[in-house]
Length: 86
Image 1 (cartoon, rainbow, N blue to C red):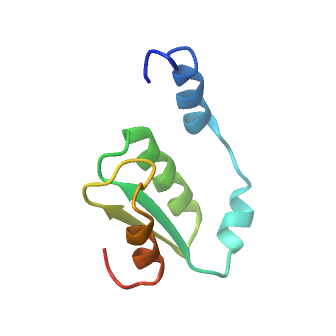
Image 2: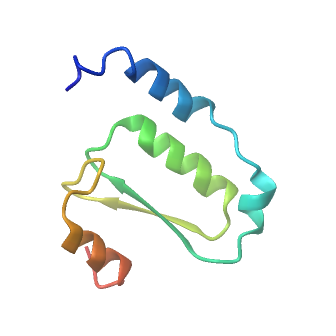
């Protein structure tokens, strides 16, 4: 998979690191925001989530043990979204 996508990976990494959003919009959100990060996800995913969370007062980051990106267990994701646990 990495070899098949070798040319696209640097572009994707730059897109994560360089993306800029309207922080005023994120700062004004009046709803809970949950950012899910797999503990085994690439570090740039966590850095991106940290940047979003720092601009969003209502944001919470939840790190999922034994998970990567994407979360491959729909039942586990449903449980998290229902606030029933990990």
